[in-house]
Image 1 (spheres, rainbow, N blue to C red):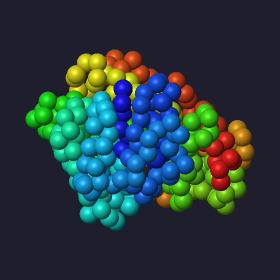
Image 2: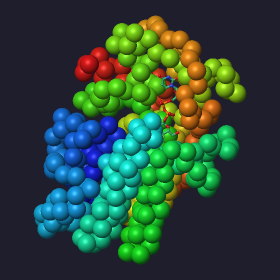
Image 3: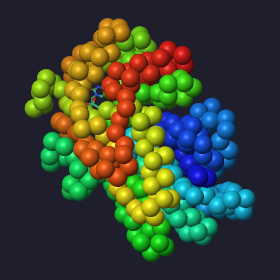
Length: 325
Ligand code: UFG
């Protein structure tokens, strides 16, 4: 397949590029490098600096590439994704995340590209109603980030219906870890996610960390989340792209593990390597007590389930961080 990866210099996009190349596909990366890093782009991928909110930039790249050979699939990873930031910058989030997708779809229709793989999020569910979150559950985002992803999902569905295109929408849960090669991983300032924060604390890069609340109705009082290794997640995109090309049918699936870990269990796992200096703090606004995904549909349609576990996520993130920070 010839695959266009928009946002291929970011954390998840760069891992998808590695998995596509390992699987033998031709990859073209488009990224505006606003948060992505050029050094994360695989050397065998073709790179274009471009911004999907600027239609002329995207059109130029598609004109050039599709003249050589049209893309079989376009993958979209180029979103802003920090929940508190989205509350602070709703206009920027809608512009980048929704208008960016609209322009991408417009350029795809103008070049007759039929397949799109889109990164969505568990945040579209809001406060989950059941122990295991299923794709048919009610969507009710509680922040602009989740709203922009849900709006994009709907836009994609309507456009695909009109133009006889196919979509694969993945709703991610909590993603962590780094590629086993340690060439790529999560590298940015002001990290907020639990696993990298815990590891930075263990490595002495932070003085201490806070557990946000231990009075939730869970087995040890801290929040439960469903953690997935980034390489497992990335490989799902290869399967999703193949599904579209082979079946000409759309799908929407959760990418989770059916299992959840508490914040304290994650810290205990990191403490197998090094002690972690943590204190118990107040609840963080907007945190649901428990989010765990059913991955039955991903298994059934794509034959996908995670191969790596929490200790693989911690080991690879720690090794990557030691090497790069
Ligand atoms: N946590 C701490 N201390 C920290 C950081 C996090 O206790 O320093 C806790 C949080 O309170 C939460 C859990 O660890 O209970 C996981 O928090 P993260 O910030 O790592 O991730 P979230 O579950 O908040 O967010 C993830 C994705 C979002 C997505 C959301 C959907 O990163 O993009 O799930 O539920 F929107």
